[in-house]
Length: 207
Image 1: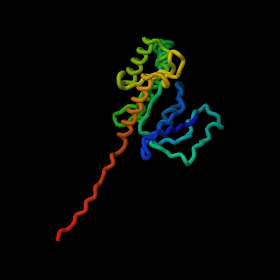
Image 2: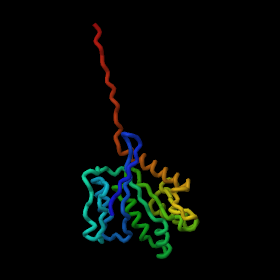
Image 3: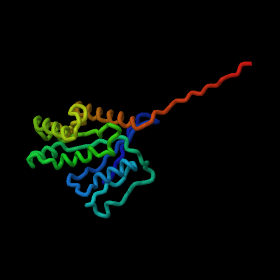
Image 4: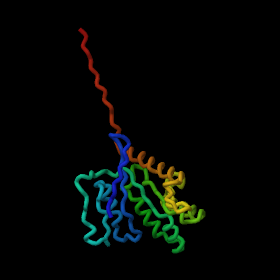
């Protein structure tokens, strides 16, 4: 229901924050998704900020944000999409693109771009598909979004064949997540103007 801030400290003076949001609805007919995205990119985000939906009850839309939480600029966005849902929609609708078009609407939103850098795409639940279906789904998604299959997307499995959370034991998944975060940091650093180090000089007058 609300944005959650996760702090990752690099040192005593540096670090970065990752925000986890509520998922968007594939059946967004009122443009709520883009309205909310525009607010985040224009005004920034903060911990406990409400993620609103038209179907929410009045009791759920109270903003519980506290002044003790800082509002932060969005420097890089990661779009997470369920590959299994997208492929299922493609198959069951005879090539229909409802889920994929909804994903494209979010991924291609201009406010999420940083210069010529697209948001980072994370595909999940691909482990629910066969190897062939998974490859075909990835190819179709990248084709529609106009991104590279080799560098524009990260395929993250959720569970191993033994039913264990993949990030806890799968080195391939751990590497993919690490690379995605590293790339996000590189894109984020582009948003910051380098600080210039000014060295002071003292000239002593000769007699």
